[in-house]
Length: 406
Image (cartoon, rainbow, N blue to C red; front, side):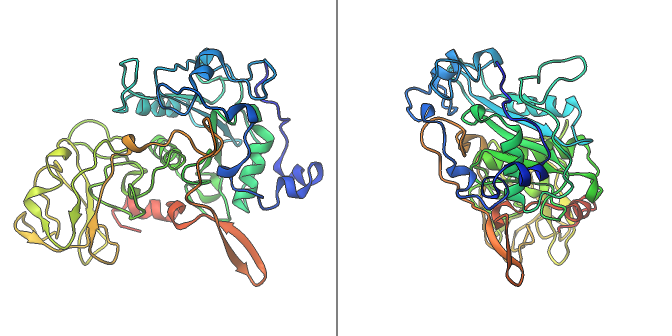
């Protein structure tokens, strides 16, 4: 059985091999509204709530109802009693991550505080990243190298062209698709997802922008962009950035370095608690983030400067106004948004949308964050990510590394 049915070829070849409207022209419908095979529409039972029908996870998935299994989920380790996620991870030359990056991503999801009918916690994420020396754990039959493109621009059309050329359509109801790529839209953003929720994303930390591709940055950005396809946002239920009480890799403060703990390594997963809201107009310094944040540390920004501060145990007192003592009730713009207000948090793990784009049974979920059209010069338009999906750039990463809010 061959899962990768498309012939690999450069994206530029689309211009000669396919009609423009089918390849690089603006999409007739965004990824979240793409047409799925008719065989996937009829829903019956999804015991574990991962968007994959029990019959797919016990007998395999027949994309075109011809009686032949196209995606052998049970052979890949799926179970109807334990939440599963599938992601095909292709890569451009020189940008394939070390196997330890994939190992760490798997560990993040395996440790998720999520319950399952089988009584075992966590989410089993199946990464198709091809064979690595010494292990075939990530060789699920579809991943491979794609041609180098040093600028995926216009980003939606070119990312979708990669997906069309290198991702087997029979997998569309089961696998999300991503590429370890160079850059997009002539910028230096760390990555982008094609919606919230969605089925496709890229991590773009390539050589064109001189990214320092540390394992932490690659793990954090992969989990971050995947999070958007699972329905998560930069501020939890909203798009407010740098919230000290939002202890998630979805928070810009923690995307590249993880959420710090009082002991042990940083955490590169999603938030596991909706910590108490912070009213920047009346911050009680002695309370910190409250008892639910015990064992965690956090980052906030001092008033009158862009300098970041990192706390001790976030459940203890925090000097929010950087006044030199932890006392009283203060007013401070601790996320440097330009105003003071109420900062809310979210339990990310409890709010995942396993279905997104073409992934999952039934009708596709609506993409709540479509790309937007902008006029790049008189009479010339292109699509760019909406505000909710604009990501940290190389310049932003350099500033954060030096304790300065971009």
